[in-house]
Length: 273
Image (cartoon, rainbow, N blue to C red; front, side, top):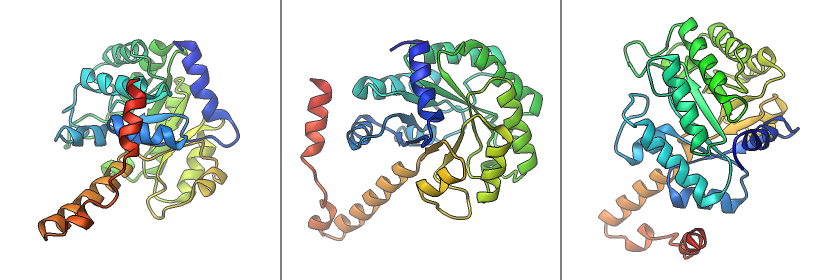
């Protein structure tokens, strides 16, 4: 599938009654395990991918080319729609964002996220007009060949301003973004307010609102159409590794190696066949 076919297939997963759960992979085996479990689309995670390289997320520490190569690997191994978590779109100008979108289309990605972040910890969120202009450039470049997610990071950058977040998401929707996303809204009421403000366009929520972890069914009842996991699965796996390392340093080989699975090799062999 290329271009408009990829776009239509991926967007249809968002607009159906049940929406979709889109977990985020960070390497070849993780994406194969998620595909084997039955998920219909996979996201990259800029945070998890950066961590695999020993770098921090949101600081432009991972290049556009590195992230494109990473996303292409996930697509090649699974044949599934891949949504790219591409930070601020890589570049200072709207035209830079458009260039990134074109590169993502050429790479065969099904979706791409454009954040209103700056990469500068001192001033992490871009001014409103600039943020909207960048999404507009992304949509113009996309030409309905890739699903564009407009994202504001207010809540996770220490700016708990629901009104401004809704203002930004509404403007992104009006600029043509296909999906809207504000990571970690404070509570379910905020999720519902966002869903209502940008309707009928679909909303992504990562894991849950900040105050509690809800089930997939509860988020769906609130009107959420896409549930992503960000770096949560990667953190879960790293927590298991941390526990295994503690067991091993204490001399407990059995506990450290629990869970070794021959299925991993089978999945890798199948992917390379």
